[in-house]
Length: 70
Image 1 (cartoon, rainbow, N blue to C red):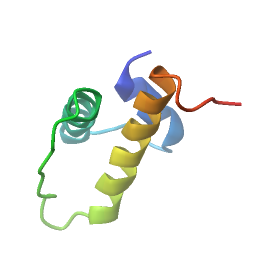
Image 2 (cartoon, rainbow, N blue to C red):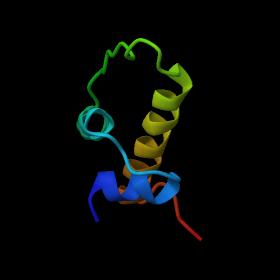
Image 3 (tube, helix red, strand yellow):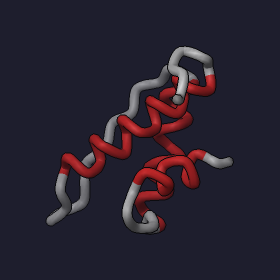
């Protein structure tokens, strides 16, 4: 299962191409402990990207065995 499929599993809609790129870049930055700076597009809800980022952090935690899914 890819990171995009994992995140889409928790959302009610499929990710757009921009959102997929954001999720992939976020995954790389979290996994390799790099900082990620981003500016959400105009007219977009900033909290949506915070939620996507949180889902990616949870996925990395599950991969590393820090979080167990019931």
